[in-house]
Image 1 (cartoon, rainbow, N blue to C red):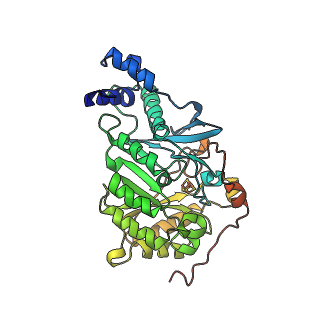
Image 2 (tube, rainbow, N blue to C red):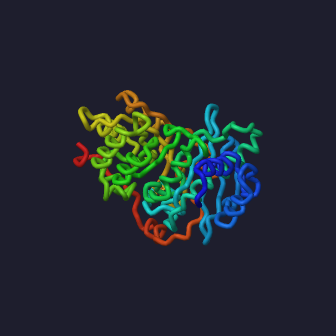
Image 3 (tube, helix red, strand yellow):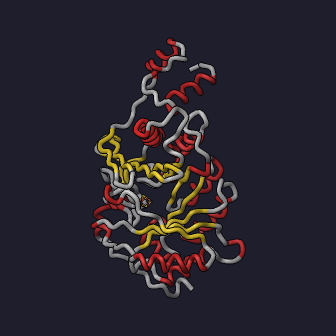
Length: 359
Ligand code: SF4
């Protein structure tokens, strides 16, 4: 628009830091510029369909993104941080077996504005509710772990990440912004170049035969390729480890043999060793999945094998259970264009015996 650069900084601060919704309120911008902006652009929050607050303080919003689609965003408060779980797509085309979003199919990518609008809305609503003073932040961490595979919406994702990191907007450190991927290998390489932030990888199985069933993207980018991509990513990553997510499914991927296979995979000797932390996620069952949560004792046995093998292993606390806000439960509303739910109904529950492909 031919304006000075500092005008962009002012605009950024008004919108993202002060939560302004109207150009007319931006008192340090010239009146002529405010009018010009109002003629060219709009600041439009996403309409809230529902807001649910769990007994543990977790908040879940359902945002209307038009044409019958709605996406979910979850705020998880902890003693030392506030984490926002943000969606990147209306639905998801990857179709992981244990994921409620995957069962709903895919409608469309969110725009950069729609990704950021989730953060904008949550930050300013929470600040008002918690009575925070100017400069105090409700949200200290963002995880791109809501609905969708963020790396399949790369062009909208990266500008959104840059705004999250920008000191004139949300000023989050790269270490506190995490992209979670099911393993879109070429885009992991691009993210490393374009905007390296913390990385979480949804692993869920230590061998290809099982991961092919649980995370269908594995057929395109099998585990060995994924591990190499993780190692390349670490060359530029703000943290010196990858977080591997592992959803514990009763009788499917949770045996002691699976734990040992997982250990061998990530803890191997030599150049293939991937510095990592393991995050075990108790499965949150939903009827269409046909899968069950591993018993607590099994999860602890599994964790102990990994810990004894030298891997930093945590078991994720289930949060927001009473409002279906826990991991893998985000469903929103999706006008499926992929017939995923019909396809998935026909799939048997995979139980791949650990045997020759592994050892
Ligand atoms: S786990 Fe992630 S990648 Fe897999 S279907 Fe769900 S949203 Fe998509």
